[in-house]
Length: 225
Image (cartoon, rainbow, N blue to C red; front, side, top):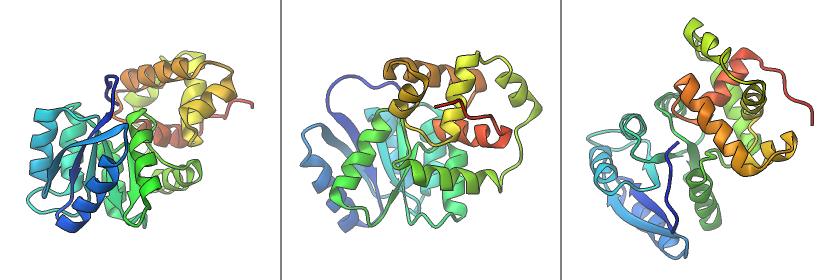
């Protein structure tokens, strides 16, 4: 999760289909608080643009030439260049799982309407990632069921979390947004964001999605409403 400055959400788009890319750009540039700062036709160019432009969000197609979206996501996230929103058909296939492992912050259906696209970009820019809690839970559960359990080192790191951080981690496992976590735990949304950042740092995770998966793997008890 990268820190973003004030002002419009800065976006880099990457899709090998020019018509799709142009359509996405048209929608986003028509939104006052979002601006498209770069466009790429392949994953390698997307990484280069993110490295030079440092956008808030990179919207990446999965299947691209030269470097696919999953590999591009891995580089962009590992180097802290942007938060990544992956374009997917969302059929819970190996592409989605690969993007999760690479640290993608969220997912976008290819047939999402204009309002959904803008909402998804804003959500990722806020550091929240996944679009809908119901979708989050389904995806996290399916992924957690197919991935190896948490390592001993990760389990040990979880032991360093404060009780409040453990509560926040458990809420992430439920697919709750920052505001929903804040409401459930009776604290400010800004405090929730701080806890999420500390959790990711302590556990050496790349995204809140990975934290949510870990919470599912560990079967952390949900804090009371």
